[in-house]
Amino acid sequence: MRTTEEWSRLGGALIVFLALGATLAVFAPRFLGAAAGPEAEIITALKETEADGLTLPVPGSDLPLKSRKHRFARITVVVEPGAKRAEAHATLDFDGTLGTTEVGTAGVERVPFVVRDGDWVPEGTAAPRLLAVVTALESRRRALQAADASALAKLAGPGTPGVGGPEWESLRRMSARGYRAEAWYVRLEREDAVVTEHWRLLGALPERPVDTRGERQLSLTLHGDEFLFSPGLM
Image 1 (tube, one colour):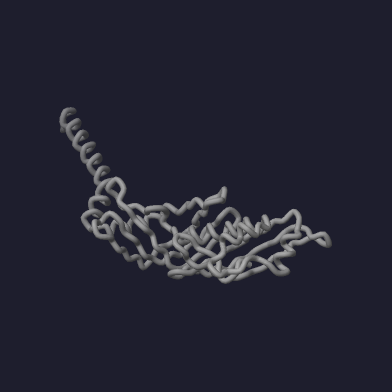
Image 2 (cartoon, rainbow, N blue to C red):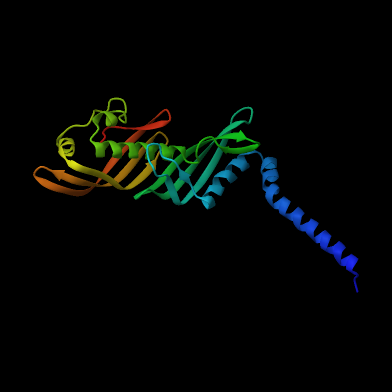
């Protein structure tokens, strides 16, 4: 039979073995990623967001864009000379919400990466183009709710006319106005985005109450880091 001292030695060895295993579980993926190069590390970083979920702050909104599920696929990585910056090109399927608005997207995403504290991480967010489109859509929604023509004009691309016509005049005359986006379904292309919006307009005209639902298609074009509406805002 083993003595108490022998059992103590075995217990100590077991503790050391378990501690070594835990350390390897934490650091081995980083060592393997570094050994495989930045491409593997960046792909792994994007794929890990699928389990963690995405929560993206939307400028001007009190609520973030949150994913229920999303998937990056067909990922390629371009590393800049010096290996301090890179850009991941991928397709993104996204299903989520911005408050009560359903948000779905499919298409092309480009994600800049930088090295921070020895790790490759997104320079901003893991879905910058989707976030830019949703930011433009939410800015437009707020401007329509406020009937703010000047705010809408800032969202228009070059050569896009300002708002006007019967639909705008009716919106402008309305009191207790509420413009809700019930859903945005986004198709992201390389330099453009096409959005199907399901909307609801609530309010009151002098002659009658208003509660109208509809669907419209919107087109946006990338200008620098932002998407602008073209050829129209409504």
